[in-house]
Length: 278
Image (cartoon, rainbow, N blue to C red):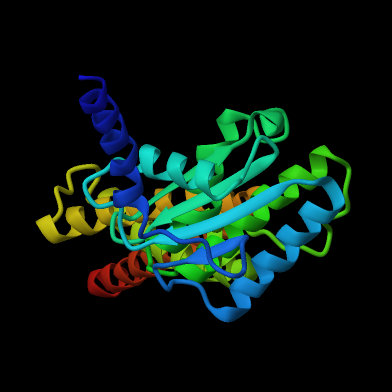
């Protein structure tokens, strides 16, 4: 009976090794890319900075990618890698399952203050997912790795200024001026639609019901306007004031133009009436 019991225990212990045995640590140690989603440059990048962390602060930072986690949950798979790759109590594991499109970050208990739980998932959403949604694993992994790396360095007062980390939610950061100019141009056109609609309403003494396409166009332009205002604020808060100022200027210009045309029409009609009386 004891032999059977021992045999059962042995089988239970061997099952996870059989399932997860496919994941083998690469020669780079800090980087294992079974999913083949990292370039050689990225692997060298991670290895270089992870080695620096190890040499400078005795911190292990591992990045592991797999094709999928098969029929097992991400947490169990990631924990297996964490324990069997020797990440340790002063370690971080960035684990990626390509086909499942899932990411998990595990940390050792000694780094809980440097990397609090509230930022682990938040950093994935901010610095990685916008890239990964477009299938850009390379930049997503690099940006996410760099974000966690900088957080660790900042906590331990180690210089990490040479690392560049972008807020991946707003990948348009390098094109802000051009996007803001485009928003101003589009909003100027929208202001033309607004004033034209309201001038028709004004000319009809409030009785203008309008055609369906006019009303639909007005509602659509209003929705676009709101979205553009929000985008301008996200890109640069002060740009919202600039965009609004340009739109008000465009509205006033278009209003003056319509109003002057109306005055000319009235003046022409009066002249014609006078000539008719004579």
